[in-house]
Amino acid sequence: MHDIVDLRSDTLTLPTPEMRDAMARAEVGDDVWEEDPTVKRLEAMAAERTGKDAGLFVASGTQGNLLSVWSQTQPGSEVVLDLDCHIFNNEVAGASVIGGVQMRAVKTARGFLSPDQVRESLRPANIHIPPTGLVCIENTHNRHGGTCCTPEEIAAVAAVAHGAGVPVHLDGARLFNAAVALRRDARDFTRDVDTVTFCLSKGLGAPVGSVICGRPEVVTRARRLRKMLGGGMRQAGIIAAAGIVALERMVGRLADDHVNART
Image (tube, rainbow, N blue to C red):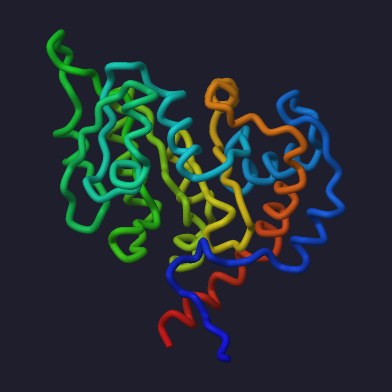
């Protein structure tokens, strides 16, 4: 019998022995009451890595994106994003069903909105038209083969959106892949966006979980909405512990993955 290396997705990885040990030893509390020290440590670490003031541990990237959209928009508003992005194609229309927002999906050349496309997609003030509530960017871009945009490209898009008073969310499920590939700090990619979600279970080897990072008031609203979704977890430090190991040990190893993928 031969061992099989399953390369269908980086979500198929198994936790390392160090992660399993950290999970077994994790100090825990009730995270719904914000009393789990391991979760709080992970959230603080994630916020620091992305240059934001607060973080929120969530079950998945899909939940993280939904909460990020929901916490920054009003029902009846519109979200501008790329036609091929994960939020539009692979998240079961959650933002529309639950958050009540309309999606304005724009066809792009390589998965990334240009400043001109954002400018053209912003809605004028008109009682007949949904107001633009949010712009979303995905980096790296899954359906475009893992391509990544630069911090400067993100900044240019954010400048247009912010000039119109519209916040920007970064779906950074594989944010650290972009940072390693372009040899930039992750904070360079998140500096100009209002919120970012990144996954601990994609590329970093943790068994479960993502983190939303942003301003404290947005994260506080997202925490309340997470509870509404049934996403509040009790002694969640057991799984957060693996996420801490992922951030401490696995980001640097992404460079090895990139080399192996090319050889």
